[in-house]
Image 1 (cartoon, one colour):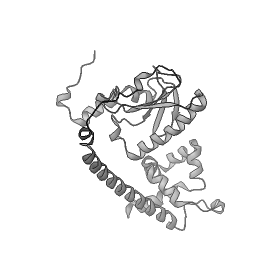
Image 2: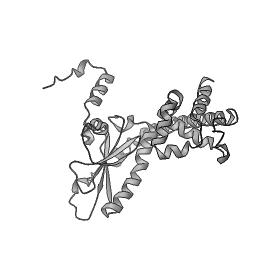
Image 3: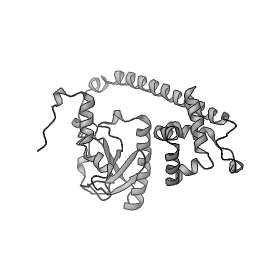
Image 4: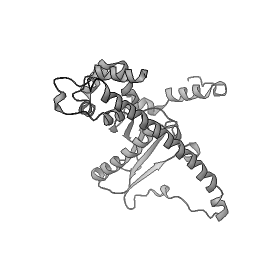
Length: 258
């Protein structure tokens, strides 16, 4: 039996890394443990639950290891929940049901059983026996219900101001990159033989690059590897069609130095 680590003498970062290395879902994502994959992209994965509550019961999780929902970056969380709409629609067509329960347990006391945050999408049917999804109604006095309202609203206000600030900065960066690409030798990153095919939507391209730091890093530091990635991914290939990646890398590098 493997010796248990001394959590009392470990830093939070060391504990997090230990959990990540021993996370069963991280091993599933890496392919070390087989799974029945339903959906997969660069940010999230959805698999069939090994112990389903119903036919088509899905688990949805991020590919990066995050133990609880608040630690997931905003763009990843947004993508995760946007994709849920598509997964629910696919379940409706595949399982012949328009009813689903989306079950989230965030934290151990809330019923989270894994150190890797995930949530469930469970197809529902009449008389399916899943009564455990019914939330009991408790009799609280009005003052008990309202005592957390003011601090909650104040905290949400601070969070939204912070979000708008970050969003504004991201838009400004995207605009800067867009302008830089447009001004870079009069779109010299276009391949001469293909430039006549039409102008590049540089703002759309810049937004995509800023929203995908891994792709931006690859363009800057490993443009040859990125060319291979383009050939392997039809959607990316469509966006970067008619571009000279070497010149695009040089344009981004010049903007980074400013």
